[in-house]
Image (cartoon, rainbow, N blue to C red; front, side, top):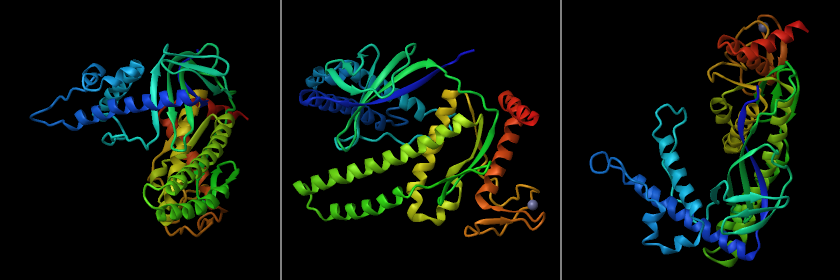
Length: 383
Ligand SMILES: [Zn+2]
């Protein structure tokens, strides 16, 4: 049985000068709607204003007639997006609580969304309502049977334009491999798999980090509002973008390799892996990488019909012997090898952790009676 999934395709967009102006205008108007919604969200008061009403386009247009100059579908969409946000904000069943909504300003990343059929895609162009035909580069086409939902036009701080097209399409099942794997993430070795494969952490990330620091120092010395500062700011944004692109490219390779080769992927809950506390400098960078890793795995597993298991954060994966279960309570971060005092096994620390993560993950999955995992484990026993 085929199930439907939502999936997005992101393309680089090249508007001409006139279109850039139109886009800037649309970004601005959408921002006005968002900020007006934030205003009314913040006006919430238990006694005097328990049910703040979010302003619609027709409310705002009285004072700001120039809102009529852009596509009203985008403005309505923004308001709907905000209502959905506030619904999620007050959703008590939500695991990760959302923060309060922020005001947007013109220096942030800009974006607006258009529902289908307000846009149309051909080979190398996209037609956006009130903007016209804009050139795009399609590196990966949308499947023929896909149903369009919406598109999001965005501009990043480095001045590049993108359009991301959200579609509903049939889940494409990757070939079943009947293999399970545990993944241990680290700093020196980015990922260690329970079958012994180690993925190194690429050096280019550290190198760029030093460059970024230097450039940010330059920026801080420039006079506010000066031309030189602006130029320097753009340079810093570009470097940020390059680093982010490289990291994301590397992570995509890793996560795609995992969903292609394994049916069940077990990872640790990364937020609390403890090790980050000892690497304060690297902390924020790796934090971002880890959440990117988990995010990508989550949606790719959904796309390709694979299973992702996130194990309990309190399980001492690196301190437990993967052969006999003995616990080394005094294991230090500097100990790269795990030596078991009970059964005498000597094993690489990360590999030991990865094997434990796999065992615990598969166990937990069988307990919750996931039929997919059970059949997968059965199959690997038969071999
Ligand atoms: Zn042992």
